Length: 567
Image (tube, rainbow, N blue to C red; front, side, top):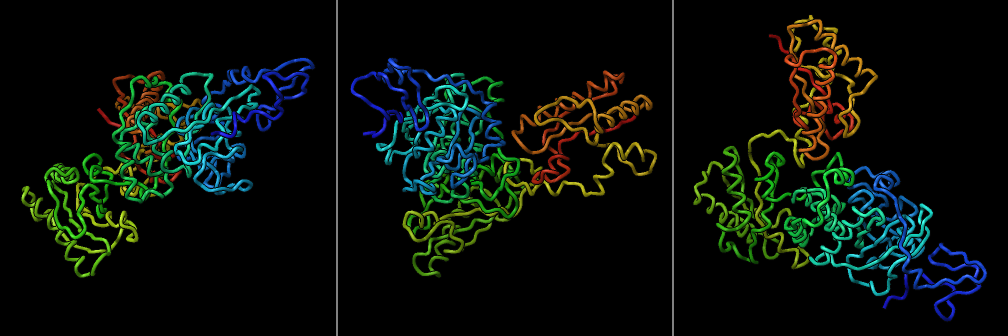
């Protein structure tokens, strides 16, 4: 049984009404003042609808929400003081849905076991912040938790927080949580939802990934990558593979679709810098985004499983990872791989090396029999070397009995997707090259020998997500100098090319870069340059000229280039 009821009741007398009472406490710090002779009915109070009208933009600014990994409270509950009872709290949808944990183990004043619902101050803080609902994703100890809180909200209205338990692994409960999120997103009177587990890593990350697939059109792999990033590195247990598969299998509900314009307002971006070591890579990545996998990388075939002491398994031709591997070999004629076999540490080292080599050869033989050249496929046994899970437990030793594919060679791609930001460095310009790449440099040295034909309009900066041209400043001056140059050089034509950095979704970057290029194109025409002398195009985050893993590099990559051509 719950031992609290909406954090109500301080002065409780017999009957439903209160007579000649100065104050009635309705929350930890919330009171209603009564005139002499005035009565208050508890049942009526519980039926009072909250009057929260705080917008997504209010919360986005209040918590300074920069991206999906931004922590409003950290691992020990510190950060935003009013939300101290939460832990690792992060936005999923601005002002609509948040994820995190419950600050129990690290709590300074009310320390208790980690496996508990949110503490009272956390619940009250959410209530005061205008949250309409808190959802606990586990069952343990929920029967001892309050079912909510009533309080005075930060906007001076009456706020009511409902607290409920839902199982993140139950599809019906997942549907209920999506419905609560949808109501918060589409009904102004409904405040945000806080979905939490114990640490704010795994269960809350799962429901966060599902929400992003439902409301932000995340692909399965983007959602899985989000889940991995949100575990703060605690993503290495083999049991978590089940959650990744559940995320990939989730299909959006049409009844919870939101408009593109609302999606644009609510969906935070992923961080600009992503640590690729925290991401989970599977064989499917080599098919879907081969440009994201660098040479030398090892990919575990998680669906290839050997029993203890076994060196083969049935139906290899239908194994999901083997099918992906053969598809990758078919797609890229330059792909060369090594099949590596591994064991746990049970038994003698020499025997383990032999078994691991036999396992690798089993996969190798199937690939050769399938028509792949021995020049493209080799195999090796490594025994118990390089365990990826603990050998202490039977449940985790199984994960060490594995096959890994090492990428020996492959086609070089642009490196502008998903995980390995180091791929950008091979294309960047040196400081000297950058200096000569700007339009201002060209105007001074245009008569020099060896000058190129493509230049950056230096300092032409756009606001984040915007394609509105600046109306003053150094970049604006350079743009007007370009106008004058084209008026003076009647035989010169110009391609206007727009680029973004690597932050955000590729499709949006492509559209934004084209809109910015068109803004320059339209400005030149408005200044009297004939349309037939101009072409514009957007290239998104392609062709970076500076490393995207640094802020200064991303600033440089968000650029407009002008390519001059003569008749």
